[in-house]
Length: 332
Ligand code: AHM
Ligand code: MG
Image (tube, rainbow, N blue to C red; front, side, top):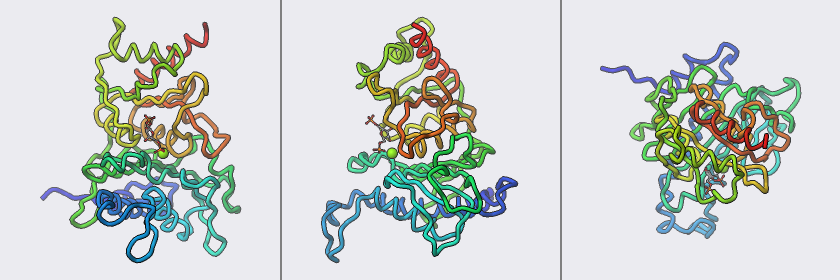
């Protein structure tokens, strides 16, 4: 019989030396939240039958939007454990302090509880993204500075993909490992150990409808990807419009995900702290690279918790190429 490795066993056996069990337990809390969110999102197609989101159900309760539900689950499962000093979520403007009645821990959790939630109505995959930092000062309760750390300080990051199967993929800086939820007994099982970005890359992913809004350097890069230059790579296009799903496919097949800045605004759509930085951490762990077009995503120190950033991530050869096109544009 082949060995089955549960996520609990894998996390315990592979915890980094510094973790002392706390980080292990925090990852397990997140895995539990993922199972609860997966259960709810799997029933999303039934809202027409069970009642509209935002409407009042038969018990007289308001149906919650799924992204708010996912946010609440993450907070409920993580705030009381004594493992965190502060949290940040896409769903809440301010940082989320740990209530004074609970013990304070030494980690910071940043997360996008349900990314791509506009895709729920059309039954397209969505995901949760998370990043974990250490608190800057152990004696204090969390502050804004704790969530404004550069991605290089991440001690762990990961995502959950609610797709045909539910998958949890994470790294603590010792490679990237993927687990698939077995719905029969509700446990994540190791299915993708030591994920490495394949070479040559297979895909590029970008919303090309915005081509006219990009700077000339970015447009030239897109022309290059599309095969218009002699040295163009042999890559095919795939774009779901759901960051976790696009990232996951490219991680397994090789490729680049792009969300360029608009020429007028100078930033992108995606959020640095809880979208770009955790995925940049994972892609570097898988042998790839992430950039805003000019510098590594992991080197950017955020100035605002919900700051947006241009994002290129995937195989290093492709990401460095967009940096070269943008550099040429800057020098002109
Ligand atoms: P959201 O945080 O409002 O869900 O938006 C993020 C999503 C990502 O999942 C995806 O990569 C991107 O928005 C798609 O944007 P667009 O529709 O502009 O291509
Ligand atoms: Mg999002």
